[in-house]
Amino acid sequence: MKKLIFVAMAIFSLNANANDNYNIYPTHWWVGMKNPKLQLIIHSNNISGYSKATVNNAGVKVDRVSRGESKNYLFIDLTIQPGAKTGTMNIVLSGNGLNAQTLKYELKQKSKQDGVGRIKGVTSEDLIYLLMPDRFANGDPNNDYFPDMRDGGHSRDNPFDRHGGDLQGVTSHLDYLKDLGVTAVWMTPVNENDMARTLENGTMRSTYHGYAFTDQYNVDRRLGGNAAYKELVETAHSKGIKIIQDAVYNHLGRDHWSVLDLPMKDWLNQWPSYQNTSYKEQPLVDPYASAIDSKITLDGWFTPFLVDLNQRNPYVSNFLIQYAIWSTEEFGFDAWRVDTYFYNDPVFLNKINDALVAEFPKVTVFGETSVTQVLNAAYFCQNNINAPFKHNCQGVTDFPVFYAMIDALNQPFGWNEGMSKLYQTLAQDVLYKNPMRNEIFLDNHDQDRFFSMVGENFKKYKMGMAMLMTLRGIPQLYYGDEILMKNTRNPTDAEVRKDFPGGWSDDKKNKFVSADRNDNENEAFDYVKALAGFRKTSSAIKTGKFMQFVPQDGLFVYFRYDNKQTVMVVLNTNDKDMKPDWSRFEERIKGFTKARNVVSGTTHSIRDMEIDSHNGFVFELLK
Image (cartoon, rainbow, N blue to C red; front, side, top):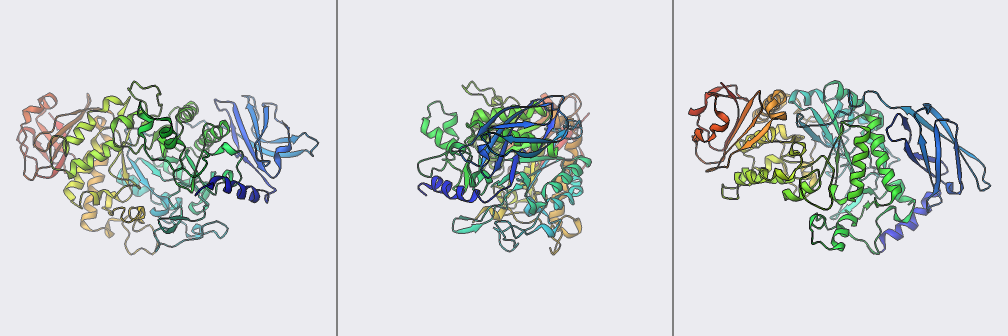
């Protein structure tokens, strides 16, 4: 892999000269943004010779014209004043004795529904459903394949091919998700991934997962394109469902237009020879870390085919920030999940988060931080840690709680094991500014399926779902959790990214409907639906306080409560039924005499209750 980047640059520059058309990024903009500044990237053959630009819109001022190192780039800095006119304006390029060239650029009016009917944010009141569009449902078979795209593979028999799922497939099943109790949908990236296949572990693979962008400003045609995405967001909002977009700031697919023709050498993080990231977050938190270890974490490449962006370059930073703002305003989704969060330059991360919140005060941003320690997770979001650098991200994907929940279900009870692990992890919430903003989960597209992690034990499955729906934070289901989809990542991640049964017209069973689900699958679906339905109306769980009691003898009891409601969760990991000493919980059960099982609806006398072995229950306390 030596000299990979520099050799690639020489090849890419030859390819770029074949295009005589121009592209402008962002593709259009809006009047009424809080930040009046806009930097346009003009990408066209031999465009850098121009030195001047004028516009025929009195409300738009040209501040500066800059060149890239590549002769095919021009950067134009504009100020869009409050009185700027909407519509298409002319940008006239001139100077250096060249013939003037006129470019068209459109300004629209910023939506008045931002923060009202769109871009409303995702909070602890929501239940997130994570899905991979390519693997969920095929709503339009006509967009499965395009011969002019680099990857022509399409076969459901190959786990590494594209399978044809799309945004219309998601739109068509919003009622299914609403019935389940879902209030927010997070999809893996929908952006264009016009990537040639990559060789990974001896197998040629497509980027069906969506994390290898080749153009941020286009939704992938195989998913339905920009129009299908707008329709999905608008339809979801009409049904009371929010949309979370997956962001990737750290890297690009190697076939991205700005990689095939680099605007400048330091657009990417360059090394004398190929350098992979260490995947370790510790050097970024460690007060004793070496500079080289920190640099390798941040500037090393995620994989050889995902090129690493240099966000310290102001042009790169502007490009990414403006894309994030453009995409939020263009489509009107409600929140961002940021992939590979800690691999990004921290100053840039704070800058882009501030820019998004400045334009859209209710937007939510949470970062993917795949770490095992609570301290390290809290470091990368708003926290109470006395550290020299303070991150401003609202919350993180809570991996420490994820690992603790799985251990709580699988490990024998001990001083640090089993339910004690979960208790101890939650006891460290003092490090977070607001742990209710963390996303909590039992699995996702990068982990083994939850049902498989608990050995396909249905009692453990129900205990896990009870924890997910009642702990502090924003709960996230992974598609198929509700129908007991299973598998491990052996031999690859594709095993936990199987198609949802019934998402394709030729599927033998349609698990979206109860008639085609077996008894266990229906029981699981109904259990999740009952918990989600209760959660949706429970003020104590959505926004209330949390109190936990030290686990004893494999029994863990915690409460969610406010001045309107008290909810008690009892988890018994023992091999025998247990009758707790209920007087131990008098602090929270005082004044209550009965407990209603929120799933079955049955009511019990609190102090007479016995808890079944290997079982968990959610009770609403009654007087």
